[in-house]
Length: 125
View 1 (tube, helix red, strand yellow):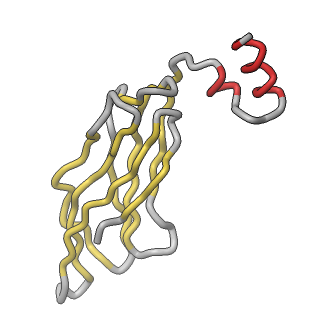
View 2 (cartoon, rainbow, N blue to C red; view 1 turned 135 degrees about the vertical axis):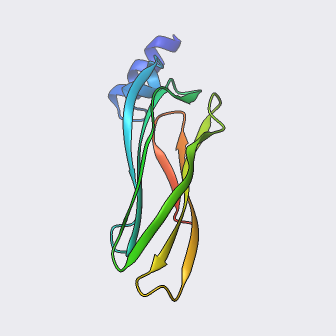
């Protein structure tokens, strides 16, 4: 009966086939911050997920693109909270406005749910 209801819900679009059949899926997320700003953080994060858990599955590649700023360096990048129903990914960095009259410390964060979807972003500067 449960399989029949799941199949009907999937066919009618109430749930995706991924939600109906919760096997493990792995992919690489290409995370990116807002593209209309002069400071655009980005990361590639390999993850695996199964509908109830999400976790990092490989090497992260961080980065920050700037326009009108110079990147002083990325001081931390990684994931946190993995293994449960959500995972965070982020990077800490600082940028200086060209000319050197102001420096900003940033802590960009993305939230990822157990279905492998990015559900939040905060540039953090």
